[in-house]
Structures are given as structure tokens and as C-alpha cells.
Amino acid sequence: MSEETKNSQEEEAIGKTYDFRVAKRLLGYLKPYWYIAAAALALTVLVNVLGSLQPRFTQIAVDDYITPKQTDGIWIFALAFFGLFLFRFIFSYVQEILLNNVGQRVMFDLRTEIYTKLQEQEVAFYDKNPVGRTITRITSDVDALNELFTSGVIDVLGDLVIIFAIIAQMFAYDWKLALVSLITVPLLFTATNWFRKHARSGFDKVRTRTAKLNAFLQEHISGAQTVQLFNAEAKAQKRFDDINDDYRNANIETIYYYSIFYPMVDFIGTIGVALVIWFGGYQFIAEMSLTEKAVTIGIVIALVQYSQNLFQPIRDLSDKFNILQAAIVASHRIFQLLDLPVEIKSPENPKKSGKVVGKIEFQNVWFAYKNEDWILKDVSFAVNPGESIALVGHTGSGKTTVTNLLMRVYDVQKGQILVDGVDVRDWNLRDLRENFAVVLQDVFLFSGAIEDNIRLGNKEITDEKIRWAAEEVHAAEFIEKLEEGYGSQVKERGAGLSVGQKQLISFARALAFEPTILILDEATSSIDTETEQLIQQAVDRVMLDRTSLVIAHRLSTIQKCDRIMVFHHGELREAGTHQELLNLHGLYWRLYQLQYVEEKIHSSAPPASNQNLSLETGTSN
Image (cartoon, rainbow, N blue to C red; front, top):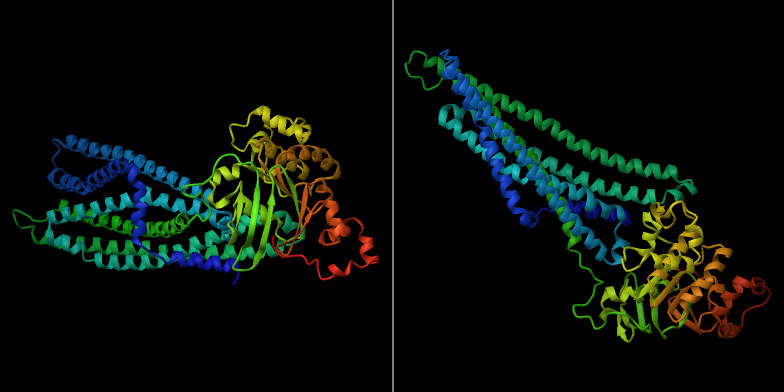
């Protein structure tokens, strides 16, 4: 089963899950703002009650002024009518302000909580979840909840208030006419229930397709260069068209149910109005000869208006119910993310924190990213403070995994890793990682100023320190030539800078943090020879008196290291200095031959003792 299919099925499963405990948990986010929500609710009730009085004013106008042709006091009546709706307008304005204020505050809290969770989540989470799908949680799903708080819960209560207020007013006028007008309500509820069930399915499909669309766009926009270089635009376009078509069809399906439901509600409402006119008119004509009439023209008109007004909140309730269901679906997705356990976190009572001395020990370490597909197998070694260690081996031999485990990006399945004699799982995680600086082959730069990319939000790193670090790695030479110098803006992912320039900035970043342990992961592999010579001096000085782990395929960059450790298929096969390993005529010697004296590989066979050591390339690192 493909990862895309699996993710899609997970989305579908979430969409079919409904639990009102989730709604209860969601309403808990209103708790800090209950006073604002309460004020908005009170105003909603007041606005709807005032709105329900309009037909009564119509009845009084017809029966007391228009029919008897009475003009005395009519201006006071008109002024009262105007005042009523002026206050209703003011209250409605304040209610909208309060509702949206609550909604935005809740959205802020939710987005902050989700982002904080994503920052705390271990890297393994991002190995399994597409970025686009995760972004959907913090954007589209949170927006669905915004609709709930701004036009959902409070408005539902308001609609219920106006429904009961209208029915009460109708029965106060004439119970027979009220019953006649309510004959069509069962039809309305039948139509509403049909719409609710089918629209819910449409909402589920729309949100599932949205997550799938976002995941595809994020991946292919980030990889646009690769798509173009391999002439894969047509294939990518075809996949996008299929995903986009699914998204469009899901929306059209939802629109189809809306297009049937709303005209149907209007038609049912028209039947109710016709029944009121027919029965009310018949009753009025029958009572024309009586001195005191139970039904007047004004009452019939008022009941017609009440009948029309009654169907609007009932229709709105159905719409609000769909908003509620969409919010519950979005909530399931959000809470599923928020409830994920963080596997890599600081222990409740850390045994160690603060600055490290720099001693590292791997004791019988076994590690696999999945099940028992071991990446490291029974690896043991020790690194003394200030010692520089090079890790070499073919791709997939486990070099980068060693450094990831050391910084506790992942946890080992067997054995233990010690820093200063304490298991990394017993360290305060933040303090542990503060002792490391990492320079990777694929440098990630954030949008913003160059100095901010070096400082990375650490206010303790002064401008002077940034300039010192840049000068040490010779990054100052190109930075100071830029129009705004260290304040020059870096585009997304460092666009506009060469690979070498980005790596120099990464070196400056590592130096500025003054780590105790330095990790260089293929840090100079993408730099031209001239640039490499410039930074090699700075790297040597930085590594002095620091525990350093250097991962490199280019053996020329690691010959000066105190020790070189050779990994093969997850096992530590050889360890020693450059010359010692060459004298062994083992794996390191083979790597050296491949890079520098390849012609000897063809002219002479390796020693017999090493013929069983293959050089297959692994599949993962």
C-alpha cells in the first residue's frame, strides 16, 4: 500500500468519526473568554427577540391605524418602530464584534498550541506525515473551527430563541392559525434531515481532498526544480489534474445538495404561508358579521410574516448543524495531532543538564528506523573530550544515524549512548542539544536577514559575535559586498545565494553558538576547491579543543582527524588514524583506492584477507 493511499484512508477514517466528547473539549477553548461569549449570547437573544416583534408592529399598524384610518399618534408609533430596529442594529453590531473577537482569540490559542506541538514532535513524526497534510491542520481545519465560534454555537442558540419566540407569538394571536402554519414543519424537518446526512458526506470528502491537494502542492512546489530537470511536468500535471478533479467533484456534490435544499425550504415555507392566508382569510370572512372578531386583517398579515420568519431560523439551524459537523471533523484531526505522544522528550527528573565536557560513548547500540531493519548493529566506541573523529563509509552505512542518535533525534532500541557518562535519555533534552552545533550538506536558511539566520533567535549572540563568526569562515567577504550587508534579506530556502555561500553562512551559524561538540555532516561536499581551502583553516581552528564528529565521503577533508572510524552495513569495522587504516589494507584502504588511485584497483587484486568485504551501497542512512 502506498503512503499516499494510506494517508488518504486515514483522512477518510477521521471524517467518519463523530464524538460529541470532542465538541465538549472544543467548547473548553471558550472557557478563558466565557464573559465575552456570555455577553455575545445575551445580545444574540436580545437581537432575536427584538426581531420577532416586527410582525406585531405590522398587526398594530394595520388594525389600529390603517384599517380605522386613525392618524392620531401614528408618528409616535413610527418613531417607536424606528427606535426598536435602531437598537436592534446597534446590538447586532456589538454582537458581531464580540463573536468574532472570541473566534479569533480561540483560533490564536489553537494555532499556537498546534505549532508548539509540532515544534516538540520528534523528527520521526515528519518522516511519516506529509508537510502539506500537517499544514492543513493549522490552516483549513482551524478555519473550520473559526466558523463554528463566529457563526455556529451562539447563532444556534439565537435561532432556537427566535423559533420559540415566534411560535409563542403565533399562539398568542390565534392557536388555530398557529397550528395551520405549523402543518408544514414536519416536511421541513424531513428535508433538513435529508440535507444534513448528505451534506455531511460532502463536507468529509471536501476536507479529505483539501488535505491531499495541499500535500501534493507542497511537495511539487518544493521540488519544482527536480520536476523540470527530469521533464516530468506532464506527469505531475496529470496527477494534479486528477487530485484537483476529485476536489472539484467533492465541492460540486456539496453544492448539489445545497441547490436542492434551499429551494425546497422556500417551497415548503410558501405552502405554510398559503395555508395561513387561506385559513385566516376564510375565518375573517366568516366572522365579518360579528361585532368582536377573533381574527383581524392585521393578525392574518402578522401570522403570514411569522410563518415566513419561522422557516429562516429552521433552515439556518440545518446550515449551522453542518458547520458544527465540519468543525467536529476538523477537531478530530486537530486533536488527533495534539494527542500524539511525544516520544523524544526530557525526563521528569533529568540526571544531567548544563554544559558538557564532551566525552561520548556508544555502548552496544542497535537502531532501526522500522521494525528490525537494523541500521546500526552492536556499535561501540568512545570519544574523548577535544578529540576529532571522522566517520566514513558508503551511503547507508549508518554514519548520519550515529550523529542523530547522539543528539537524541531518535532513541536507540538496544544499548545506550552516554554523554559525559550519562545516558542521553536521562539528560535535559534542551541542554543536551545546546551543546551541539551541526553543519549539514543540505543547508536550510530561513526567510529573513543573514544575521538572523546566523543568530537563529538567540539574543545572547551579539552583532559583534556574528561578524566574528562570519570572518572566521570567510563568509564576511561576500556578505559585506551585499547591498545591506548582514541585514540583507534571504529569500525562501536561501534562493539567490550559491550553495557555497549558504554553507559558509551555516558554518558561521555553528561558530556563533560556540558548541562543545561540533558535527560536520558532508559539510564541505558541495563547496568548490577554492572555497573549501578558505574554510578549512577556520574549521581546523573551530575543531581545536572541541569534540568533533566529521562525516565525509571526500577523504582529503578528514585525514587530520585524531581517529577515523569506518562503518559498513551498520557495523563499525575499522578505527584508527589515516595511516594506520591504510596500512591495514581493509575497507578504508579500498575507499582510498577508489578515490585516488583507481587504476591500481584494476591492475592488482586486493589482499586475500579482504576479498570477502564487499562495497555494496546501502539504501538508507
